[in-house]
Length: 163
Image (cartoon, rainbow, N blue to C red; front, top):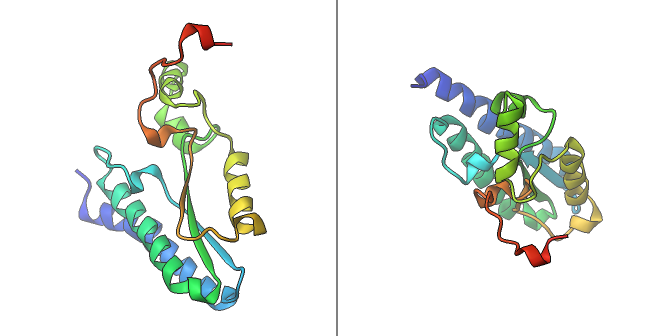
């Protein structure tokens, strides 16, 4: 039910916005060791009902990241993206899980059984932009507690091995 203008707006903000920032940054960061990091979302690699606009935009960011990593790699410029999962105290989670019951349902399906924190995203950025990440480029890093893996709501650990 999204209008063509609504679809275009999401593409313009997410995909075109990322393109413009990366393109404008290159002239200032065109040197060995430079690191550019975009933010994407799980919808970039996983289809979601009623989210065609977001899925298309984020898939575009993922492919843009990988193409630019190939194109700018010879100059020593690394290009990566981070795909955050459910992060506590964000607008996205406030909209997705509007009640304590809904929040518990979401958390129960995540492999690590909880939300990440904003610091988890910040530390991923620090890692990718530091010398520790010097040989990483073209990567879409999931920082999501395993939520990208799918519904992990089962309990596969035998009782004898539980702490």
